[in-house]
Image 1 (cartoon, rainbow, N blue to C red):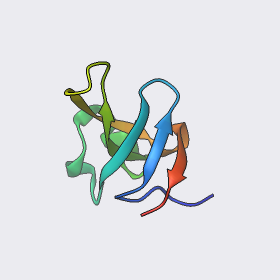
Image 2: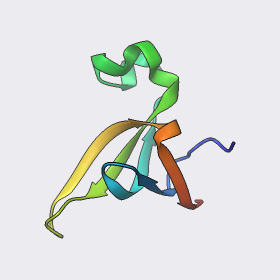
Image 3: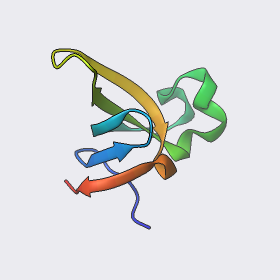
Length: 70
């Protein structure tokens, strides 16, 4: 399976479609709740219910399907 990278368009089972905006390079790059598994998460921008609102969430790469690669 290919590793998710910055710029990939992805789909998440809960948040929907989004864009990977950041990969973690160390445990200090992620929130404390992900520091135990920092190599498994990426930061994704998800378009919320309102088309002008964008949510950013750290999510597990395994929970993402890749639509388009960067």
